[in-house]
Amino acid sequence: MRRAAFFGALLVATVVVLAFFALPIIAIFTHVSPVTLAKQLTNPVVDDALLVSLKTTLLAQALVLLLGTPTAYLLATRRFRGRFLAVTVVELPLVLPPAVAGIGLLVAFGRMGLLKTSIPFTQTAVTLAVAFVSGPLYVRAAIAAFEAVDPTFVDASRTLGAGPARTFFRVVLPLARGGLAAGEALAVARGLGEFGATIMFAGSLQRVTQTLPLAIYAEFDVNFDVTLAISGLLVLISAAILIALKVASTWTLSLQRSGFRFAPSTST
Amino acid sequence: MDALTAAFRLPLRSFDVDLTLDVAGTLALVGPSGAGKSSTLRAIAGLARPTTGRIALGSSVWFDAASGVFLRPEERRVGFLFQEYALFPHLTVRQNVEYGGRGARIDELLERLHIGALEDARPGDLSGGERQRVALARALAREPDVLLLDEPLAALDPHTRDTVRVDLRATLRDLALPALIVTHDFVDAAALADQVGVIVDGRLVQLGSPEELISAPVSPFVARFAGGNVLHGHARRSGGVTAVELADRTLVISTDEAEGEVAAIVYPWELTLARALPSDSSQNHVQAHVTSVVPVANRVRVTLGAVTAEVTAESAARLGVREGDLLVASWKATATRLVQL
Image 1 (cartoon, rainbow over the protein chains, first blue to last red):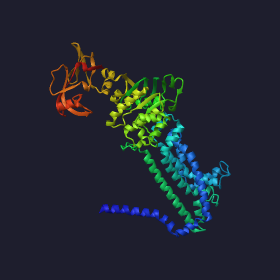
Image 2: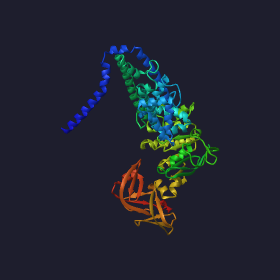
Image 3: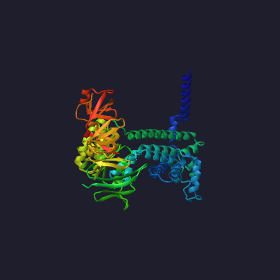
Image 4: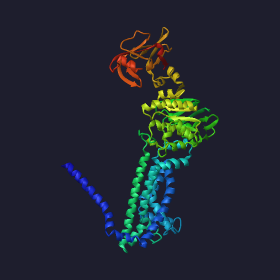
C-alpha cells in the first residue's frame, strides 16, 4: 500500500512537470490556426528580425568559435598561475543577469565609456552582446571536451613527427568535436534567445538591431499574431538545436569507445 | 646502425630515474610497476625532459643538459609503441599508419605486418593482436632510428600473447634497429631481448643476458623476478660444499662459496617431485604438503612449503599431484645459487 502511494506520488509529480513544460509550447501553436500563424511570417517585421538574428548569430558564433576554441585549448592543457582566475572570468557572464551585462557593455564600449567607441545601438553591438552571453557556454564545454582527450594520443602524434599545431588539427580537434559541437549548439540557442543585454546595449531598431526576441516584445501591443508566429519560429529552431545536441553527444560516445571488441574483421 | 646512448636523471614524484644505458641491439628493462620504466622511454622520446645528462643516437645529440640541447619529440626519429597502442580512434588503419609517413613503403608495411586486409577498419573494430601490429606499422612508417616499446604485450590476453610474442621477436630481429623494451614480465623480456636490465626505483640493479641474470643474480630481488625460489639462511663451508641452514633447520647444500647470511636460489625447473625421498644423487630435499597446483601452458607449477616446482603436465599427471598431497621436492647442490646478503 505504502509502495503504491510512493509510486503514485512520483507519477503525479512527473505528469505535472511534463504538462507544465509542454503546455506553453502547445498553446503557442494552438492559440490561432496554423494558417494564420504561417501567414504572419511574411510580415516585414518578422523578415527583418529574422535577418538581423541570422546575421548577428553567424558573426557572433564565428567570433566565439575562432577565439573561444584556442582559449579553451590553452586553459584545458596548460597549468599556470592565474588559470583558476582565467576560468572564472570566462564563466562570469553565465551568472551575470543579462541586463547587467548590457549595462556593462554600454559603459565599456559607449561614447562616454571606458573604450569610447561608437558601437552601441549598431548591429555590431548586437553581435557583441550575443557573443558575450553565449560564448561562455561554448568555452566551458570546449575546455571539458579538450580535457577529455587522452593525452597519450597527443604524445603518439608528437612521436610520429607531428608538431603541436598539426597534432591539434589532426588529432585533438577531431576527437573533441562531439563536445565542441554540443557546446556550440547550446551557445547558438542561448544567443538566439538573447534579450536583456541586447536591448540595453543595442536598442530595438527594426532592420538594424531588432532580433527575433526583441521583435516579439515590440509586436506584443501591436499585432499579437506576429508575436505568436515569431515565438513558434523560435520554438522550431530551438527544437532543431536540441536534436542536433543529442546527435552530437552520441557522436562523442561512439568515438571515445576504446575498449576491446572482438568483432569479426570488417574486411571479409 | 647507430647505437642509442642515454645517461640522465629524471625526477619523478617519489624518486629520481637515474640511468645509464647503451642500446645497440634489443634491450629490455624489467621491473615492478612504478619503477620508472615508462618514464625512461618518455625521456628518450622527448616527452619528458631530464634535469641532467645526455641522450644521443650515434653522433646526433637529442638532449644535452650541459649545452642546453633538447630536441622536441617530433624532431627525434623514434618509433614509440604505447602500452595501449594509442591508435587514433577517428582514423582508419591505413590513415593511422600514414600518420607516421607516406609513400610506397606504407603498402609494404601493411603487407609485412599482415594488416593489408584491415586497411579500412577502425581501431575500435580490431582485436588486440591486430591493434598491436597496426601500432607497430605506424611506428615503423616514421622510419625510426630507434624503437621504444612500452609493455608491448601487456594489453593482450594470454592466448594472443604467446603468438604475438613470437611474431614481435621475429620482427625485431629483421629490423635490426636499436630497441628498448619495457616490461614487468621477465619471460617477455627474456624472449624479446638480448640484454635484460632489472630496474628498481629508477636505478639499474643488474644488466646482462637473460641467462646471466638467471645463473648469477646479484640480489634476491633479481632472482625472484627471474622466477627463482628464494630461501634465506645462514651459510657455513664444510667439506668442499656450503651448507645453508634455513630458519626451520632444513639444510640446503650448494656448490657456491659463501659464509654468513645468504639467499639460496633454486629455479622451479631444477626441482623434481616424488612421493618419497628419492635415492638419486640430489642432496637437497624439501618435504611438504602441496598448497597449489597451477597449470601454465604445457607445464604445471606445484607449490609445496617455501618452494615452487615446475614440471611437465605429463609428469604431474603420472605422479597424480593434487592439493594437500605430501610430496618431496629435490634438487642438486649445483643447482643452488647463493647470493651473499
